[in-house]
Image (cartoon, rainbow over all chains, first blue to last red; front, side, top):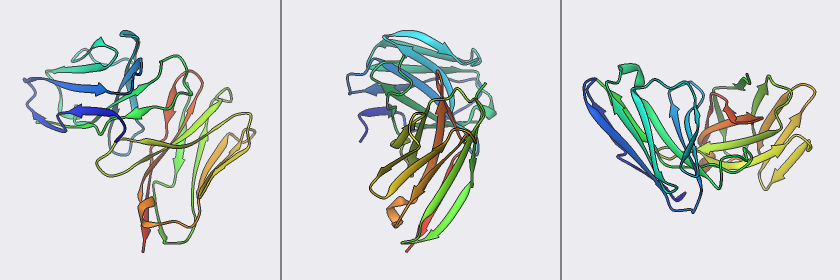
Length: 115
Length: 109
């Protein structure tokens, strides 16, 4: 295991639902990331948090709302999603967010289906 | 911004054969090139990386080569085994990682 856990592993939701994805890292890292992985497309960086401060929002729609209460936990709050938001959402962590050469440790992802 | 293209999208090889996956990048300022392996049901995991001041790096059966002039880098897996079957992603970075679209490698016994 990589030391990064994600829950739930699978989620099906309607377009009017509100749900949250959770990520926890047990590595003592200080930076956490949300990525979207869609079939046949590159991993898309969504958000970066470094020492609990958001340092990157990669033009993500406001229906995705991240929260980082501490360096070990990261949430992605979802509301009024669209079917095209169906994808695998991956969480990752690094020692700190300024060194792009730091190895990224990924969780197993949450497979999201929006009906 | 940076753009990374990866080929092929799928690759099937016989156990024991070699596999090569190629990537090109657009921004000549990119200076770090990692490769990640994603097994079924898991997140990507770093397997090898190379920096722009090095032309080649090897770790047991895997190697990566970098041609800065052509803006190409490649992953080479020798003596492939069934457990090498996975999706492989290349990436290039200046200030953040830009990933390729992935190569699904299948190694048949």
